Amino acid sequence: MMMEEAIEKLPKVELHAHLNGCIRESTLFDLAKERSVTLSHEHFHHQDHQVPSNSSILDHDDPPAARFFNVRPRSLQDCFDIFAEIPKCVDDLISLRRITLEALEDFAKHNVVYLELRSTPKQLHVQSANKTGNYGAEQKKPRLASKKDYCHVILQAMEDFEKDQNQLNLKQEEQRKIANESNAPSSQQGPIPTMTCRFLVAVDRSHSNETAMEHIELAKDLVQSDEYGYRVVGVDIGGNPTKNHFHDFRPAFEVAREAGLKITLHCAEVPCHDNDDDPSNKRVVIAYDEAKSILEFAPDRLGHALLLPPSLQSMLQKSKIPVECCPTSNVMTLELAKDFHGSLLDGMKQHPQLPLWLESNHPVSINTDDPGVFDTDPTKEWRLVQETYGLSLERIQQVLLESMDQAFCDTATKDRIKTQMKLAFDS
Ligand code: 6MZ
Image 1 (spheres, rainbow, N blue to C red):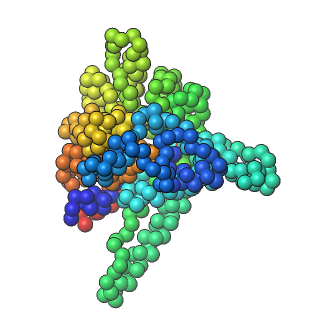
Image 2: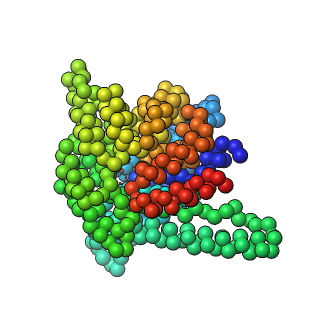
Image 3: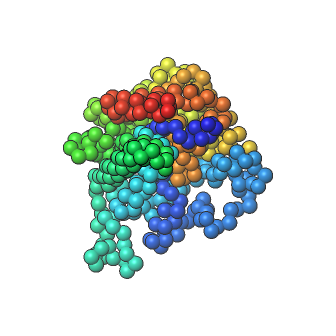
């Protein structure tokens, strides 16, 4: 089997995906049209739109590999401009359910067997305004749902998705048995692995520490739910890394830790040094101080941990805190492909940390971050990593199994999924 095909078939683990960043571009355009929202940003190119001639990523003389990883450039600022647009379209519980189910479908298509999806709870409309400007039964005013309702919609979508997948698997299994008994050639390829879905409640660092505490309390509350509690496994802090400081949010995360919630923190997405001669670079020093305090806090996992200076890098290595690496996102937000005619492969060779983590066996997982925004999926991410560093299939399988050890679900679930993965590796 070719490496590309083998990677596609591998059972995968996704630990770092932001729900609203998973939105399909086609869905974003549908929702915008329904709501008469004009997406004000030049980052969106509808299929009908012409690709701008200055887009280096899509240059005609790009090598084929660069065309395969065919994404538009996204700087960190671009991403946050886009994130500001999405809630204008995902503005009610119905569209929230839609993007959740589509995100689950997209991950399952790439044989993700375990998914931890994260999202920042929001107060959305119960339903959107119809064309006459009414919200349901002639209501003129939008009814706002609670943040708890927001989480329930996601958790219910996970529940429904898993149930549907299980039913489909049973049906396929029956068909296979019948085909085997009658010796008829089976048209089925094998069972679709059922994807186990878990949820992390996210905190946006551009909001206040009161909101952070509210989200942690919400996570604590959700865990108590008989219906969905087991799906809520942890909390995260993300959002624009140039805003605020982890210090302000630390008390909220201490509450989360005391409550037994697992914690992952975005870390060092922007440059950080312990001193900088240029006083205008105050932010770089603040970022260093922040990265250090995040490492000292010792969360269960770190998001990105990209730009740690050597002293903090060695602190990370000693700590053995697993890192959620998001290759395409990293190449884009660090603008590593800029000097290479937009080739993700060439940009990936400049990744500041991943080669070191792989060589030193630092616990690491490979993730998509925002598949809709970065035009990526788990298969593309693994192909990018494999092609850049020439990893063997066995090494990829090892990283995938170890990622399952880093998951926030209970041990029995981890063991069950690891057994399934090993069976699939051997088949
Ligand atoms: C930091 C990010 C991110 O929560 O509305 N988010 N935060 N760094 C990144 N790297 C590119 N990508 C996404 O999903 C969208 C939100 O996730 C966070 C941001 O807060 C963004 O608004 P939800 O479902």
